[in-house]
Amino acid sequence: MIGGKRVCVVMPAYNAEKTLRQTYAEVDRALVDDVILVDDASRDHTLELARELNIHALQHPKNRGYGGNQKTCYREALARGADIVIMLHPDYQYSPRLVPALAAMVASGHFDCALGSRILGVGARAGGMPLWKYVANRFLTAFENFMLGYKLAEYHTGFRAFSRKLLTTLPLEENSDDFVFDNQMLAQTLWFGFHIGEVSCPTRYFAEASSIGFRRSVTYGFGVLGTCAEYRLARWGLVSSARYSDSGKRLPQGAV
Ligand SMILES: Nc1nc2c(ncn2[C@@H]2O[C@H](COP(=O)(O)OP(=O)(O)OP(=O)(O)O)[C@@H](O)[C@H]2O)c(=O)[nH]1
Ligand SMILES: [Mg+2]
Image 1 (cartoon, rainbow, N blue to C red):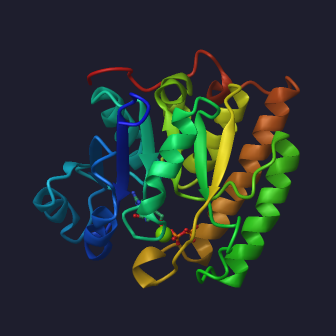
Image 2: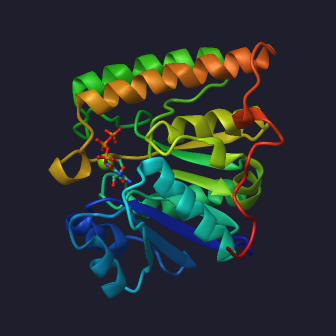
Image 3: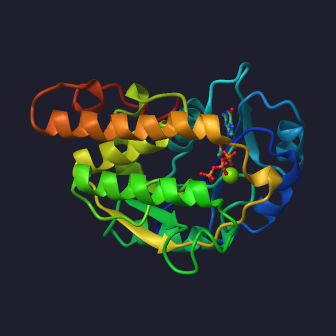
């Protein structure tokens, strides 16, 4: 608990057997009330290891994708009474030791979303981010700041904290089941008037922590450009999108 709020860590997992133990070992269970792992039909023993570690684990019968995995994560966290939900990749790329910092940003009431930013501070390149990913990240971030009218160091980190209010307000079911889900969620966060804060976070690049190659990154990059365009056009009233509508489909608020 932090500030009387129930803290839940969710881990969207796909073939995370080699890194899950280490990631989980650095989660402070004195502060974190609940840990949930959703296994997206991994081909390794991620689910078995999660159960061995006494993590509350669910499995998709078929691979749904990273966005689809997050929808299940947030639905389950809300059903189990979370007030603050932190998404942590089980690939040990981000530092679990910063979970309390992210949770505190949200618990403060200043922000409904807090991001662990790899660009602020020591920097992503020092952690081994490939140059092409770094350049793409900087370019897409500059473009997105311009199009969304906000100021972030990066929109592409996978280490994020959210309030219950945000998770039950955004029409998350309208988003993609693929990687661009992350970007659509941040655009919705700003659309619905929530504030986003950032904390510096070191990153680590090694084989098991990074599986997204050039091709999937390009697909993601175009998805980001599409998200920005749709947001701007919706703001100008030129398109209507369920993603930015009060009638868009939301996650259930309680037990599912
Ligand atoms: N559900 C699902 N999750 C996936 C898939 N591929 C990767 N993931 C998960 O998505 C997250 C991000 O994927 P990574 O391979 O770590 O991406 P990365 O190459 O590190 O990307 P950057 O951090 O931006 O450099 C991880 O938590 C993976 O477990 C997939 O096909 N399906
Ligand atoms: Mg990774």
